[in-house]
Structures are given as C-alpha cells and as structure tokens.
Amino acid sequence: MNDKTLWQRYQDWLYHHAGLDLYLDISRMRFADPLVDQLKPKFDKAFQDMLALEGGAFANIDENRQVGHYWLRDPDLAPLEFKKEIMETLDQIEIFARAVLEGSIRPPEAPKFTDILSIGIGGSALGPEFVAEALSADYPAMAIHFMDNTDPAGIDRVLNQLKDRLRSTLVIITSKSGGTPETRNGMLEVKHAFELQGLDFPTHAVAITVPGSKMDELERMEGWLAEFPMFDWIGGRTSEMSAVGLLAAILQGVDVRALLSGAREMDEATRIADIKGNPAALLALAWYYAGDGKGAKDMVILPYKDSLLLFSRYLQQLVMESLGKEKDLDGNLVHQGIAVYGNKGSTDQHAYVQQLREGVPNFFATFIEVLLDREGPSIEVEPGATSGDFLNGFLQGTREALYENNRDSITITIRQVDPRSVGALIALYERAVGLYACLVNVNAYHQPGVEAGKKAAASLLDLQRRVMRAIQTSAGPHSISKLAEICGSPDQIEAVYKIVRHLEANNRGIILRGDPAKPSTLEVASC
Ligand SMILES: O=P(O)(O)OC[C@H]1O[C@H](O)[C@H](O)[C@@H](O)[C@@H]1O
Image 1 (cartoon, helix red, strand yellow):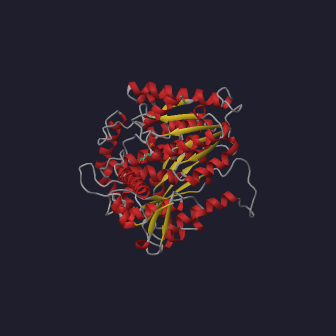
Image 2 (image 1 turned 180 degrees about the vertical axis):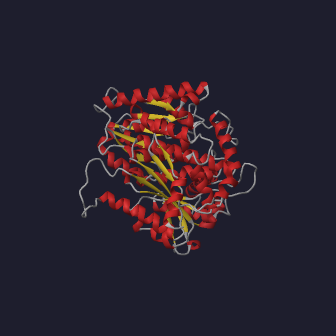
Image 3 (image 1 turned 90 degrees about the vertical axis):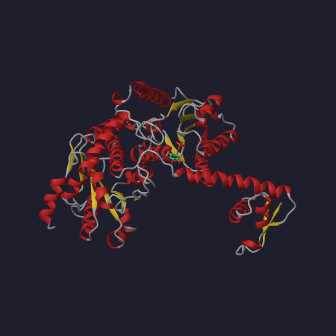
C-alpha cells in the first residue's frame, strides 16, 4: 500500500470517542473487508451475549455466577438487590477515606495514618498497582506500598522501608476468596511485625473480601478497623472499580468518580452493536485477525508514557486469565489464549524491539500514545524539538518501521493520563476481552487452570511436613531415597530432595552431607 492508500485506510477505520477524546486506529492491521463480513454473525451473537450478561445472565456458566463489573460504574443497570449495595459501598468507602485523610480516623500510636500497605495478589493487587503508578500524585497524601507475594525477602524489604512508619500505616488486606495463601501469609507476617513493635494490628487493618470468607471471619473475631465487601459477581481481574481499587485510589487522592465516569462512558460506547462504531469490537476484530482466532500472535503493549508502565502487567492477567482456556464452551479441546507482554516506549526500543522489527514475526504491537507531554512548558532539547517531540517521534518511527517489515500494530491515543482516560482504558479492554471470548467461544470469567498449581503446592507442603517428622523421629542419617520411603512417598524422591535442600539452606534443623552435584550420594540428618 502506498502512503496515500494508507492514509485513506487510516481514515476509513479511525475510531474517535468525542467525550473521552480517545482514538483507536487499527489501520495498520492488514485485515481485508471479507474478514469483517465473515465475522459479522459472530459479532452479532457476541453483542447479544454481552447484553444478556449486563442484564444479569449467569454468564460465568461453570461457576454459576453473574458477571457484574459493568454495574459498578452504572448501578442503574444492576439488578435491584445489587444496586443498593454498590452505591452504599462507594459512599462508605468515601466517608471512611475522608476520615482517614482528615485524621478523624487515626491509629492509636500516631496523629494520622501516613502510609498504606496493600496486601493482595493477582486481581487483588494488579489494578491498585497499575492505578497507583498511573494516577497518584508525586507526593500523595498517603504513600502506598504493595506486598503481593509470599517471598520473605520481599516482605522484609517492604517492612524495612516502612520501619518506624509502621505505627502510622493503614494495612489494606484484599482477597475476594479470603483464603489465598500468599495474602494470608503476608497478613500474618505484617501482624507479627506490628507485634514486634508493640503496635496494635487490628486498629490498623482493613479487610476487603466477600462476606462469609475466612478473612471476613478473622476480621470480625479480631475487630479490625473496617471491612468493605467484595461482591461475588465481580471477578478479581475486573475488580479495580470495586472496593478493591477504589479505597486505595481515594486514599492516594485519585478522583475515583472520574475514573468510574470514564469507564461508564466507554461502556456506553462499547455497547453499540456495530463493529465499526464500537472500539472494543474493533480491538477484538484486530486480535482475531492477528492470531487467526487462535491466539497465534502475542500482544505487545507499548505505552509511550512512563505512568502507564504497569498497564501491560495489568492486561496480562485480564487477557491471559480470561482467554487462556483449554476447552471451549462446547467442551472441545481448543487451547485458546493470547500472550501479553510489554513495558513502555521508547525504553523498550533499546531492548527487545530489535526482535520485533527483524526477528520472529509472532506478535502484533499496541502503541498507546498520549498527546499531552507534561503539565507546563518544555525546553527545547534541540532546535525546535522537545523531549516530548522525541518520544512522539520514536513512537511514530517504530510504528512505521514495524509496518514496513510486515509487523502489524494498533494505536490507541488519549489526550492525557487522568482518571477518566484510565477508567476508559480499563473498560475498553474489559469489553474487548468479553467480546473476543464470545468470538472464540470460551468462558472469559473462570480460571480452572489456576487450581492445579495450588493443589500441587498444597500436596508438597504436606510432603514437607512428613519429611520433617521423619527426620526428627527416625535415627539418621538417611539417603534421600530412604527418607522418601520413610515418609511414605517412595516415588517422590526428587520432591523430597528439593524440600531438604531448601530446609538446609534456611537452617531448619537439617544437615546435608555428600556431593551436591550427585544428589543420590547425599545423606540427611537432623541437627
Ligand atoms: O482475591 P483472591 O481471592 O485472593 O484471589 C487472588 C487471585 O488468585 C487466583 O489465583 C486467581 O486466579 C486470580 O484471578 C485472583 O485474582
């Protein structure tokens, strides 16, 4: 295609949302009109399914759950029994956050809460992390810290950074299920740190969970400072606009009403049952074309704005946990999904973009362009050019260079990174994922594959308990295979070996003798 034809294609396919001032350009995806005609019946069904979902259908059929994240930003759409709790929860969060910021809710040991420690994982962390990076002020009223793993060194790092400020730290513990081990461990470690400093943990702790969960029970038993509900009909990866994301955001000074309204406006735009007039449908069409409806190409997310750095990580869960499915809705083996990765431009141009330009063509890029460079004027770093002009030049240049070499791309353009545009971006991708899932006939709202890893981890911890008991109660030393036999798992020699190696490294009462390069020579004894 020559430049003129491309310019025409750009205009033919350009989507612009006037209220949000958001552009979507899929002209650099090389699909042809017949594909759009061919997909039309699938899209018609997808639009209908989406209407039913928003109307309260049990769209997550495997778990027999409704899917209600759209109701969070437009409670009028929600079934009556949910409308009230959505609105009341938002009011309660705002009242609580205002009182914390003013100091009328304060810790017993300090005049005001100064810091937030957010403990949670997956959908209970990624949204708050993304929004904090994108929208919090340089010096927010309350600084936020995240604990999203069960890594002891990571936990220590956060606690060491907080140190004396632990006395004025508000701890938000988020878990929809209330039983996720990483989050439970983080909570116990933090509670221990509070006790070591003689601080009262419950008066610093806020729970966000589904009523009736284990965490809810604990919160009631210990009398924590507050609890806000997570709703059963909200999935973790679409929970940013529930208590999960809103509480932390308000405490950092983010205008969450604007976040919600940006999402609501985007929801309205993506409800339109017309491919060309619906930005989420255009995205789903582009993804379908890129990967032949089978996820054959990876989605590389390249925002040219530092504050959007975590968008790709956020989208990784939203897209991959929603679409990465073994079976379709009819039970056929399909192994669906789209892999997502990325950081930011132009930084990544000095890292992996070399491969994108010249290497294996197994991806399509999504550029996110922000028109406003910064608040206030810019100096010229070269005659007639600012740093922002360079950033823009690098984006346009990379888009062009990729296209020339048969690498397709999508470009989303927003005027600035603010609560409305961030809300709109989240809503845009939520809907695109929902529509794409309909196109490829998978359930976007469950995650059965995650359970396998959790079960395997639980059985390894059970084996570890048996290994430790065997070492303590039987006269050693023993070879690894003997130890596996004693603890009743003769076939799990490698697992036993890995357990004792880890225990030994952490001074857990075990000595290992022998040649580390030849594990079968190792002898295990207690010490
Ligand atoms: O919020 P929680 O119940 O603690 O769950 C946290 C995360 O854990 C699981 O592994 C799920 O796959 C995620 O979708 C979820 O967001």
